[in-house]
Image (tube, rainbow, N blue to C red; front, side, top):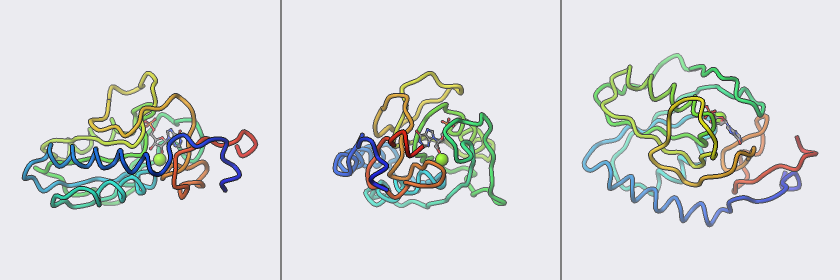
Amino acid sequence: MRNDVEKVLIDEAVIGRRLDTLAERIEADFPGETLVVIVLLKGAMVFASDLLRRVERKLEIECLNVASYHGGMESSGKVDFLDRHFPEVNGRHVLLLDDILDTGRTLHAVSERLLEEGAKAVRTAVLLAKEKARAAHVEADYVGFEIGDEFVVGYGLDYQGKYRNLPYVGVLKEEAI
Ligand code: IMP
Ligand code: MG
């Protein structure tokens, strides 16, 4: 697996230190609220598990399965909700977690849905944000790292379902794609 990686973009220790800062900001920004955290599967699960264990605040964790990439490298432009049940968010403060902000369609579609379901407020956190124009008007409230517009894997992010378990964020060699 590691042989397929061209370069490490953000290593484990750097990610960990950044998560300390994000967790502190999240704690300070939601005083006294019991938060509902919505984790977008599967990409955000590694980010969520490392980030949320640093947050000292009562919270509930819910997961949502949405599909936008369908395993390839191009955004399909459409966001599908794959779960039968939607988490109960009516009147609640919600923190939405995703792995990466790319076109913005996923965060936009899910934020809208959460508000439709009655969420009091929705804030968003992403590990990575690509520096590019977004198709949907959305920016995240908490961003781990800004990266260039290139395809990355690791720390939850996949290429065709693989490489999510790399402990760092990296770029694949051309021959691995
Ligand atoms: P958006 O809706 O275009 O912002 O796309 C967000 C989703 O696309 C993320 O949750 C990822 O699953 C996927 N994605 C976007 N860029 C990358 C990448 O560089 N590597 C792996 N997945 C990506
Ligand atoms: Mg994904």
